[in-house]
Length: 160
Image (cartoon, rainbow, N blue to C red; front, side):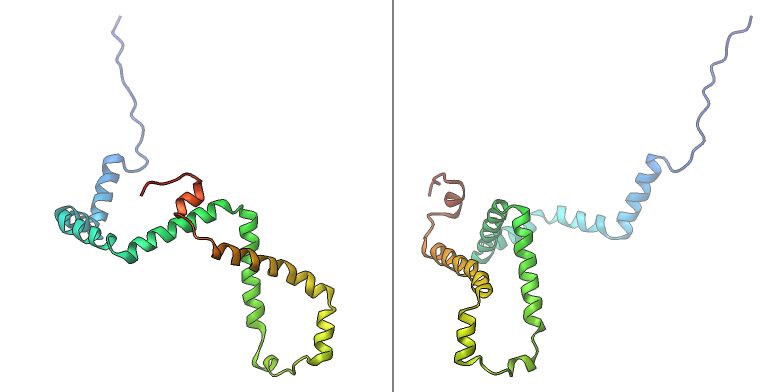
C-alpha cells in the first residue's frame, strides 16, 4: 500500500494580507507627510521640549489648566439631568431674548397701575422666586474664600 500524501489546501486570498496592508499604511503615512513630521519631532526633541516647557510655565497657561480642572470638578458633581435642564434653559433664554425686536423696545412703560398689576401677578412671583434664591446662593458663594479649590472639592487638606 502506498503512503498517504499530506496536502493542505491553502485558502483563496480574498484581500491583501497583513504585510501588504502594513506596506500600504506606511506608504500613505509617507505620502501625507506624517512620517516626516514624526521624524522631525523625534529629531528635535530638546527644542520641542523647551518650547513645551516654556509654554506650560507661563501664568496664563497654568491658569487655563487650573480653570479647566475646576470646571471638570464642578461638572462632575452635576447630575446629567440637571445639567441638561440648565444648558437647554439657557438656550431657550437666549432664543427668547433674541426674539425681541427694536419695535418691542419702543413699547410704553407699564406705569403705576401696570406695576401694581405686576406686583399682584402670582405666576410672575412664582417664576421669580427660584431666580431670587439662586442669586442669593450665588452671592453667598462669591463671599466665601476657598483655601484651595481641590481642598474645597475633596475635603482633604493639601500641602503648600
